[in-house]
Figure 1 (cartoon, rainbow, N blue to C red):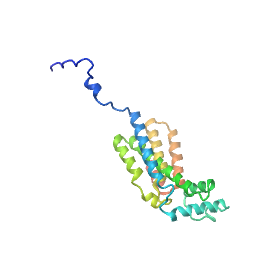
Figure 2 (cartoon, rainbow, N blue to C red):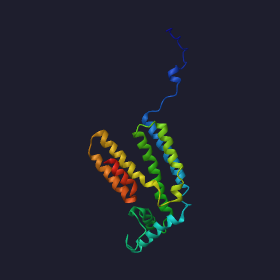
Figure 3 (cartoon, rainbow, N blue to C red):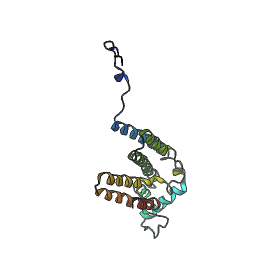
Figure 4 (cartoon, rainbow, N blue to C red):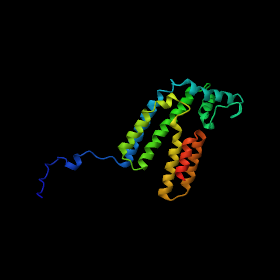
Amino acid sequence: RAAQPPLPAGEPSLRSSLPRRLSPAAVWTCHLALLIAVSALYESQFILRGLNVRDEGWPLYAAMQLHAGGKLYDEVLWVFPPGHVLPAWIGYALDPPGLEITRAIYAAFNVALVVAMYALARRLAMPPTFALLGGLLLAVAAPRTHMMHAVYGYRYLVFCVLALLAFDRRLTSGDSRWMLAAGLSTGLSFFFRYDPPSGLVVGLA
């Protein structure tokens, strides 16, 4: 191959003129910051304006009954796993009736789920841009979780995803203590929903 002629003094080389690739840590940081910003902005639209008064109303009414001395599964019947009423109970305790605080807690669940799903996608060796696209779709393309605000929200899947991430660490590191973290996350998921963690337990087994 013929030798390339030398570049004039002060002229940047071809390698230095190419855009620098971000390090893996910088990619993680940029993607997570974007996902959190987009998801939080989307969720903030529902803090002051809910879409489903009925499904938001029954946990708030249950929380009011609990604060008045009622007991779960006694006077307060319409509670499935007890976690369903927990955000409303916290909201009612802090600022009755607590509707906006409850919505903010649900929004935090959704943002956390977007981040967790991105992390899981990256652990499954999905290309970073594909994982980012999936996270962004999850962040903004789920209005039905607000239409069925407190009952059918997939927001509680965040605990199942955390359990899967912990189980992945168990497989890759060989440290059995990660199974404790996976079990705790699965138990928390049962506190909020029954069906996703039931499938998770079968899958882990």
